[in-house]
Structures are given as C-alpha cells and as structure tokens.
Length: 396
Image 1 (cartoon, one colour):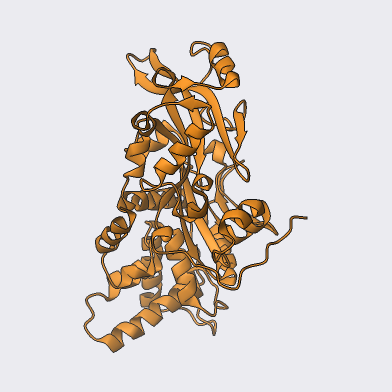
Image 2 (cartoon, rainbow, N blue to C red):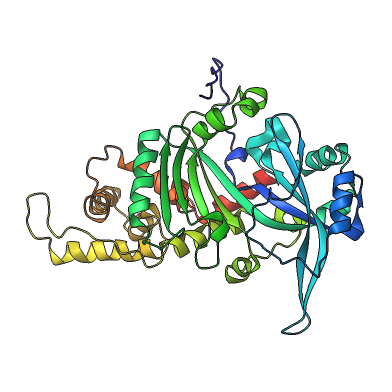
C-alpha cells in the first residue's frame, strides 16, 4: 500500500496564476534535420526508422517503443516517429521524420502547478539538454510541433460537493458504446470522471476528464510530491483537463496552434473557448428529464414548466446555471426582486432538472458546475472578456 505523506503545519494554496489554464503535457516533435542525436539508442532508432514503411498511428501509447530516461521522481521519454505536413494531392501525403519528446509539468518541479508556460519553458529546455540525448538551439526547440496536448485547470472543491457534481455530470452525459461516453471512477487512489477513452479521442468524442488531484498526488505521485510539493495545500484540490490529440480535432474546433511557441502564447480566452466547445460536444444529445410535480405532488404551472424548459435549453447549449441567472436578472433594477427571482430559478434547477434537493450548499455545487463548464462565479459580477484580460495579464 502506498504511504501517505504528513502535511506540514503551513501549506501554501494555489496562487491566482496557478489557477489559470496551462499546458500540462504534450509530445513535442522536432524534425531530425534540425537537431543532433547524441544518444546511442536513439541513433539506432534513427538508423532503423523508415518514413516509407511506418504507419502513422496518432492513438498509439506514447511510451511504446520509447527511450526512457529517469530524472529521479519523474521520467523523460523520447522516440523517433514522423509528423504530417500535408498533401500535394489526394493520394500524396507529406511527412517529416522527427524526434518526439514527452514533456509534462513535472519538469518544472516546484513550479508544477503553473503548468508549462512561456515563463518557464526555458527551464525544461535546459533540463533536456543536460540529459545529452539530443542537441538543438532554443529557437529550434520552440518551433517544434506541439502535438497530443493536455490543457489543465485546477481549483479547490469540497470533496462532498465534488463527489455529487461528478455523479450528476455522469448521469447527464449521453450513453455511448464501447470506450466512448462518461466513466466515473471512485477508487481510493483515483476519483473523478472521464469522457471517452484517451486513445479513442476524436472530433466527435473529444477526451476530457476531471479528477481529485489530492488523491492522485498522494497515492500515485507521492515521491514527487514529497520532494517538490510537500509545502503546498492539496486538500480538496481538483483538476479539469482536455486533450487536443489529432488533426481532425484541431480542424473541427478551429484550434490554431502548430508549434510549441504558438501553444505557449495561446490566450486564456482561447483555452476557455476550446474547453467550452469540448463540453458542449460531449454533452450533445443529452436528454434532461424533470419531474412534473412539486414537493406536494401538485402539477407544475405552465409558467414554471416554461421556465424549466428555458433553463434546460440554455444548459444544453453550454451555458452554466450562473450565466443563465445573470442573463435573466441583469435587466431587473430592484435588488430584492433579483434576489427572489434568483432563488426561484435555483430551486427549479436543483429540484427539477437535476433532482437533488439534499444538496445543502447549492451555491458551492453551482460553482463546481461552472468550473467544469469553463466558467467561474466571477461571471456574475464582471464580463467574461474582462475576466479573461485579467487572467492574460497574470500569464505574461
């Protein structure tokens, strides 16, 4: 059984910057003619590699046939493969042989919760160069192709609220066949909700997941945690992440980044747009059912049914309950009336759409849903564009 660490008396919570969207991991592909391989095993791989004979498989597990290099409590992986450049005709496709490097946030160690950013990427570059596996200029490194990208966002959610929220999202996700659709996990070392299998991720079923980051660190990455993060507050820490894996996904969702430099200069606004688009895609065709009577068994009035249908429609189009309430109430000048109407709408939502009256803290649950949906409770008091601009300033 994995041991659990003892927390220090003073734990540092996530900063505002660490709560932003950031890249958690990617496979960086650098053309072989722009670098020098300095590792014997990789040189052998290069010698045996053939762009003519190898079948491109964008869903293959990255670690398969990769060179693994230990960095203590985490590893680096390298492999030789190819990158698709386009085609000159319907039958003629162009590829270039590349060195593919698996990079993740652990490379920045104590700055792990920042993710991979334009502000810390040089640390990763320097560390990779020190391994003496390959050599290239920093400019070449930044112009490498960014593929199989995971984007993450972290927040704190009380575990009782988190457990209820993922349960409701699992119920609300349309049923799919095989490895598609939602899958909830409740193991001691792994709690969360996943949409679609990572290797089956497609433009129709993009991969995304949320999980209990506290459990993941303390059970699955305990050595890394104790070495670099033991002074950080991880109680009730949760993560949401989505994966941009294939070219069809990028095309469908109009995702523009190609190089590592492009990716790390992507705005918070754009990361949020992709987040919302993935959520809408995965909840597409979801059918929400609601009870037609009140607590006493009395039939709901036509106006109440209409309000419920309105909320249902807005939710199915990717809005959060907080944004819906804001849209409805923004033109009501009387504060008392706004407060009353907000309570009525929240009651309709929790009592009829998700049918969970036992949730004692609907405001906390509402914030949890907003986080998973790509929004925050700040949307009630300021425009999304203002919120994004503030986040972008923190990211520079």
